[in-house]
Amino acid sequence: MSNGWKDNSIRIELVRSWREEEIVELYRAAGWWKEEMDPTRINDLIRGSFLFAVAIDISTGRAVGMGRVISDGIADGYIQDLVVQSDRRSWGVGRMIVARLLEECKKRKITWIGLIAKPGKEDFYRSLGFAPMSGHVPMLFAEEGSGC
Image (cartoon, rainbow, N blue to C red; front, side, top):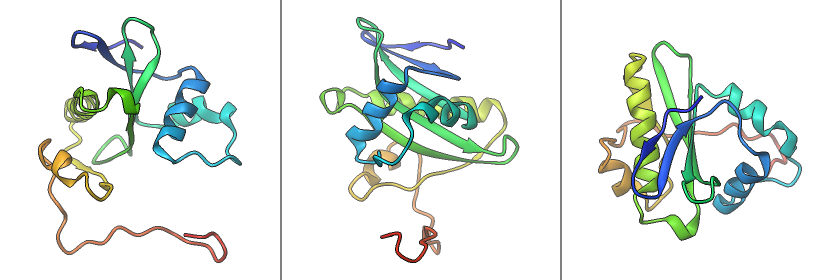
């Protein structure tokens, strides 16, 4: 599937698969990759996402950023795993990825779109129309001994 959104050097595509090593590299760049994870399952992760966007360097064809939406496809969507390679940050790549994901969710009439912002990134997300959910606390299931 190729739905490109272009600026001068980056194109945003919604994909159903991608080169595993490039996606693993992005997860590592964000500090989210755990070595016990199986890189051969990356395309299962992509296909299991409601939307998966890749920012592609037009000159090399390589992924330099990504983001995805987890959703039931009817009502709610959650943006997660937004990451851009460090040498491409402040180019507007993250903004392009989020804008594309929002556009696609709205086309599908998904209007409740949430995310959890990393501390220090609140202003970035506010500039894209997100606001803190007062009265709500993000939580994570933590099995005993998981280190969470």
